[in-house]
Length: 287
Ligand code: SF4
Image (cartoon, rainbow, N blue to C red; front, side, top):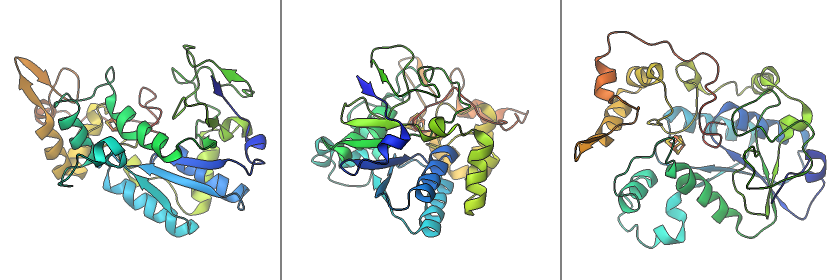
């Protein structure tokens, strides 16, 4: 069972850890800012699990956050997991590549087989928390209505069965890690989240100019316009993303379903950059 805890209750508990996982996206960052402003005396821990394939803009954004608020973001990777730490001797591969090669034999993740989120994001987070009682502050906004978020409402101070189809977005289903949804509790929507970021001097991450989501530069949730944006803004990362694609035993392994990045490169038409938010993404990486 997942016990959802109301913000008022969580912030009065000095016996547990208070963890704000960051994805590099606007919502999780705005939540971190808000928590620092509202509860300056709570010992929040800010956490980022790095796949090794993040955009340069994400690292710049974190640096700005640390500078403005004089706090440190703890960086974790899947290579910190004991079962990988023992095996990864050369230290040359990024966490994504290591897990891709050693665990999944080159099988690229996709929306149906999203091993990347599980191994690269969730497991390092759970390892970091261990068996401690901890609140995990999650930046789902009050105006969000994405598939899979249906179980969370404005008054959600009750428990959800982990088996229920419509369950809240959580980073972990471990019972010692209790999710808190401050934006839901405070009734905060997109405009207010943007205002929090603007007024803090942080603003939005720069990649929102051409991309609708945080996360890996090769994330398979990207739309064509975003791939084209990656090619324009970071041609070396686009080239790098192409190196993962292959045809094996007559089967094509591509990031984008049904077409390769070479196909996208050849398109004459420039697809529009996504406007607003694409809600069909990863609730953990794109928050
Ligand atoms: S951003 Fe995309 S590719 Fe990266 S871990 Fe998340 S779902 Fe996987």
